[in-house]
Structure formats: structure tokens, C-alpha cells
Image (cartoon, rainbow, N blue to C red):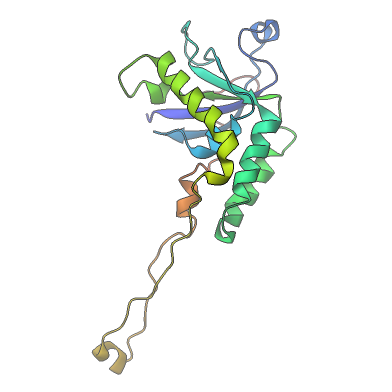
Length: 196
């Protein structure tokens, strides 16, 4: 099994009275072996450390942030991506704007990621919280990936004389944009909660 980061939405924060009655986590996405930029941007809406919904620990090893504010920040960043990313930008917006996915908060669970390295899970979460908090004021300064330019290889004189055709290298022009956390939205994750 891969170590993953998990993204959920919810109307109630862990440790609230409503939370104790029902954990209303709604699955949004998961990512193998990393915490992608898109997840971090979605958590920029007044992020706070909260208790995990996955791991039974007294430490606060998850992060919650306001849904609408975080979504606005992600959309601001996505608007800066080149036109080649449009299919993934459209997919992200359509998925996140579905009424069935919208809640008051995003919750990011990274315990599995933190567990891959040494050190306190709570300390690692607090470092991530600081990183996320620092993103919002500097959205315009964040790196924007670009699609690779596909160049046809030059044919030798012999190949040109004998009519060999140039073959385009097979590469996915969306590859750089997958790396920021796009293209992996799903309402079914490894850890499911509620009636999903």
C-alpha cells in the first residue's frame, strides 16, 4: 500500500459537538507519497491544526481550512496555468464546484506521509501548517509549470533522401500539471467515511 495524503470536505471540525455525533467527511482526492500543491492551496482558507479522523492519536496531525476561501485561492492559481492545462483545470473546477462536494471546510490528512520520515507527526503537521499559511499572500509568485515543447528530431541526409518520415515523440502534454495535484479527484478514497 502506498503512503498517501487524503483530502476531504466536512461541515464540522474534529472535536466539535457535531463531530462527536457524526464524522461527516466527504472524499475529494488522495495522492501517493506526497502532498501536492493543489491540496495545500485548498487549505489556505484560515488553516488550523486539527485531530486526525483516520489515526487515533491525541496529537493534531491533520489540517482544516475554509472551503470557499481555499477554493478561491486554487482557482486564482489555476487561472495562471497555460492553455495546455485547460482540460485538467476544467475537471478540477467542475469536480470541486459540484454541490455534492461542497462543505464548510477542507480537511487534509497527511499522517501516512509524515510517518515515512523520522520525527513527531505533530511537529511535521505544524511545519506543513506554516507552509500552507505562507502560500496565500504569495500566490502570484508560485511557480507555474509549462507544457513541454515537442520537437521533431532532425533527420539525417540519408533519411531525407530515402523519404523516412519524422515520428513525433510520445509524451503527455498534461504531465507537468498532474504533478501539482490535478487529475486525481475522486469521491472514493482508501479511507471512506459516512454513506459514500
